[in-house]
Length: 412
Image (cartoon, rainbow, N blue to C red; front, side, top):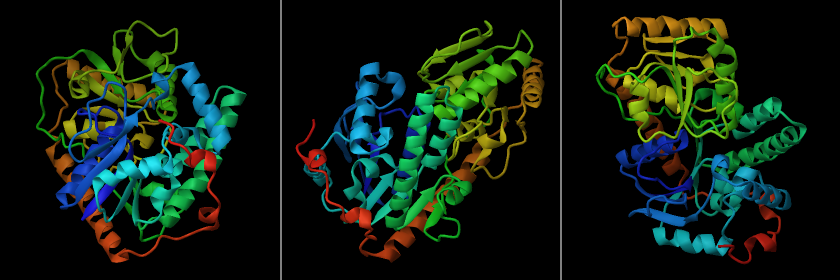
């Protein structure tokens, strides 16, 4: 079977963001099932060239943290004119014909894997003509609703509320057309209105880093946090940790925060350091006595949680950070209020300082995750093959005339 994997971003050699790590894990699982996979997507500036089995759709700026104020304004104006969510507008760089010409490089394919909502919203025809598997990394409209509630200004609230309305309609449409829908947590089936729908198959994720406890004794910080903090749902958890938990920590407990961020909040103690994107995320988390998994919103699964557990590292997690996780390692504490979270961190930091290593062998957790991922992908492929080449569902929205200005001519 040959599937065209349509994503916003091509692989970039070393996966750094949660989205890229999840993509690599899912693509590897398809290949373990014997699927020939061609990946099509855009590239960041400076990213490695497309490799064999990849189709380069052009260079793009996609993260808000890497975009200028002018670029953000262009995205917003384009989204208002086109009626798209801003996240999809970022990708709407090609005409229909221009995109199809590039995708033709894949040759004949049996279907499309629609990797998250952005590509099928930017190019709706991708969900038509070929049977599709939709991978819902998150329930995007619910994340946008949370962002609207947490936004600091009226303009931001209105923008996120608009995103939520548009995303809800588009997610419903994409799910209706798909032969198979994979979510990354069981809860997301309900969030997408798919509870009881046999097409909706959750996927466990494995980073593939399960290893025996590695303890070289090197520690750069007591508490480590890593994530893409420019993504609003992640930023909510980070701000909660900094505002509510950090003031409760002893003055000698050091905190290091790795990952892309739009701007750290001012007035933090000197024990808190922002490192930006680190060259080796694995080395960063291994250099932490304890990992803080301070998720307070969003949907989908937290890849940093899975990575931490596969590394066997001691951690303290909020319940939201444990979405999609079955068995909890014994060196992980769970707390949802600041006092309990801080106390659990301090307990583990002090144990590590005293030489009582809490690190575990993560291979069993990783193996279980990988087996569950492979089983989910295999079930989806069986359902996909059973659906055959049945035409996708056509809705009134599909039959509306296309806007000529969006299909003519190619924009890059």
